[in-house]
Length: 252
Image 1 (spheres, rainbow, N blue to C red):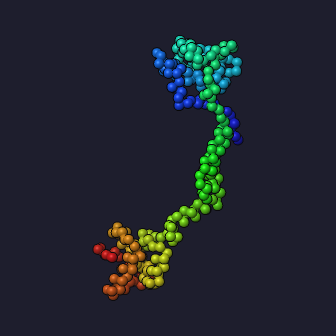
Image 2 (image 1 turned 120 degrees about the vertical axis):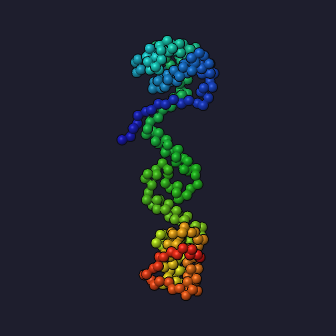
Image 3 (image 1 turned 180 degrees about the vertical axis):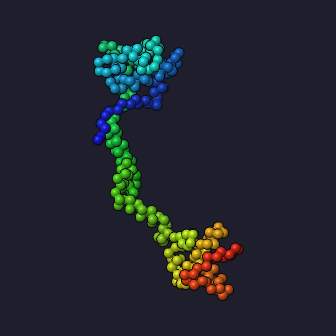
């Protein structure tokens, strides 16, 4: 259910405290106190368009103002006299007090209206931005962003990960998921080391995990190890019986 109640607020310009009347007021003895009372009276008068009234029939008296501002009656009476001399407050025929220039300070809205105002502003900002696929889902309606938009965003993210070359992003392999290979590199290993590629991937994975060493290219490291083993006449374990031993000092 929409909340259409009206809310009033005080709008102060940046130059409010530079106004001659306010500067004079605050320069007086107890001027800062009077300035505080004045702001409270502005706030209290908002509901009735600047008139200080408890309701439509009862105007505020000095005693009532003293109560709502938490000040002594004498202080309030002196403040009201000063306000009237400075033209900040005017007495009305019905005995009520009217806050001068209140029309400059009154702000009014409702929760429903405020929501629509924010939506319009967000839409205007959205139109001012370059139009891309992501702009199809405005920020103020992100909670109901259509699934296809979300899918499109995910696809775009994946494309970014693939890089400018268009090649798929590398994936992690091995017992400890720390051997990084592209699809092309993995395919090459399977072709050139048909019975050994899994052994060498797990061997490198174990070696990296145990020593913390970093390699510029994991595929190149595997090829180098395979060449060294072949030169030494060392046969890799048969498929399905991997050797996970990590020898200390094992090098490229």
